[in-house]
Image (cartoon, rainbow, N blue to C red; front, side, top):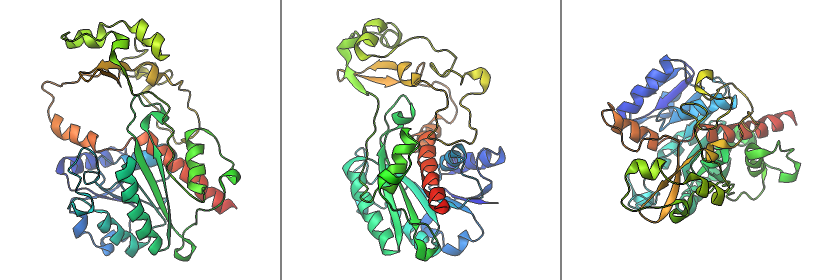
Length: 349
């Protein structure tokens, strides 16, 4: 057993055990206790520790990035509800503000690498200010990047902060330092993250490469039309000409325009690779997205063929909750791959 997964949601814990059994995430144990009840000694013998583990997507991301199961790694995407714009705005007074407990364990165990994710924007920046101050007091170096899911060609924005912390030399870790121009960046999203990890004065970077909202009238908005008309019956040609994208039929049943990643080939390949390296995709996930016409006068991109309501799907509420709280694994893989570039480059130097 190499990994420890901490998750209080019973449905998510069941998913974790199934994924471990199927060999899709690092082998390990699932602990359903609250992180408040976890003691440092409980983590003895584990190479990787994943807190607020959800569906285990940090382990999925690590494998996508080529981060071995037996390479030390802690992950902790603390609950976002206290800081999300959709929440009550309780902030640090919200009982779901659980960074202090993750920090308690981090301070006691001094893992070499800790990564996590949090909401973007001012609330997330304020949250990370406190995280960075706590970590600096324990001689950890930390960095943050502000990046969207569309930067890895996902047909949605989902802007989030991704952060990392390393135990400094005094604690057996590697210090992130050095000017960005000396990084030898490999380019692309991974190269941009790598430069951000190395930057002496790290600030949030925004590499949003897509458009999320447009004036719905530009693609033939019609009040009172049936859903299938709004989704399928609009004049796609006019909309695509205006937006500079191509709207059309999917090349395969599930992935619009994903050449080389069709259903017959088993979907998106998960082989270990540098996540910043191109994999043959051509940006067509955005081109193939459908435009959903909304009642606020805006149109939003959505996945091709996505059904907005599911009738008769067993366990759909837990599934929605699990998906809504999850990270975007390919984006997290870019973060980890860029971090490996930094760590392995530092070790080689």
